[in-house]
Length: 153
Image (cartoon, rainbow, N blue to C red):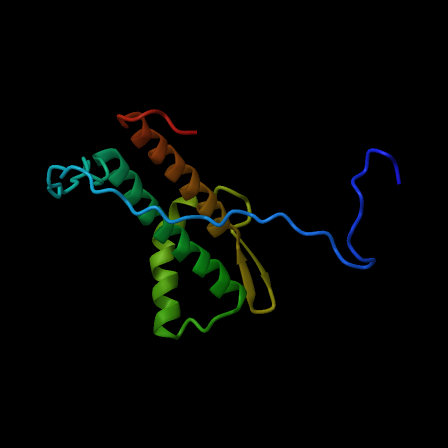
């Protein structure tokens, strides 16, 4: 114990008294001057037409039509590879419709088809698939020339 310490009069083992913390007090809100009544307003956003333009609609129709052509040609390739029975109405219908789209591409290569057993790989149909896809890209590009908006990559 130093000479500056106050004398310790409490018994051994007893804790020193704690400082009493002030309790928070509740303050009632004061009445304020009456504010002007708030009138509800409705928000009407400035909505622009979401309809696609003519060029965009033309692009969508082009993709749909060429997609159907590509689907029919793809089904032709698969049916001939699987040696589907041509007596079936669905199979003969698909082969007849696809022949219209494959016809212009026959004779481009020396071999139009490769046969093994009953399966046939219609090479001219694969060439037609590539040809119709290239034609689709050219048409989509041509429709993109007439778009009003900024060019897209």
